[in-house]
Length: 196
Image (cartoon, rainbow, N blue to C red; front, side, top):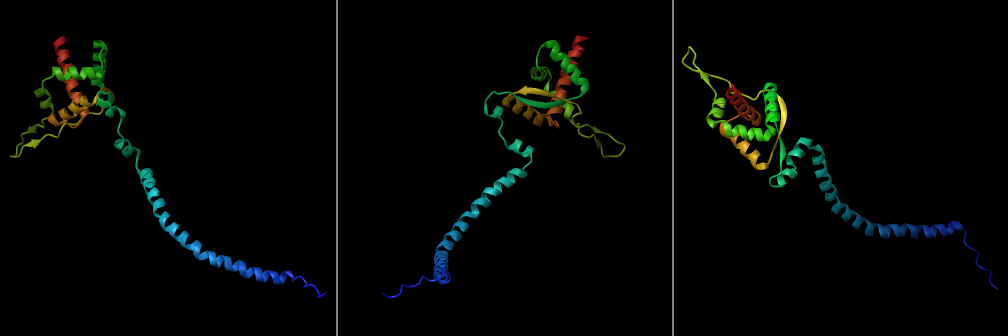
């Protein structure tokens, strides 16, 4: 009987297996690299485009977000919303007293004031006055501005706000607050003169 072949030492098996192991990655590497490169090229624009809006969203101040957001009260026709106006403290005390005595609201009192006061009276308050000087050129008085005051909230719907803004443009008032305080002042003064 011929002698049995002696098992090969582990050293000799490793080199034969090692080249096979080395061949597998090299054979598979070209197949794997192409899809990875193609996938990387396809995926790169997606994260960039996803990250870009997040970065701009994070950088926007809260005021801009609020300005761009549509309010629910603007979507519903006739819905009331708060419109802040500033009244001088003395006028605010008179307005609060009138609201209390008439059992009404700030908005209803303002509507009554616009109905009671003539447009010519309102317009006169916002016309810049010129004064004559010793020289030939008249001196123009500075434009009237709203006074510092305390904020109140008028509950108005969209049509009322649009109407009020149109009146601000019509009378060339510096702001809503200036127009509202002027009209309420004229109305309360008329009411006080009638009471006397």
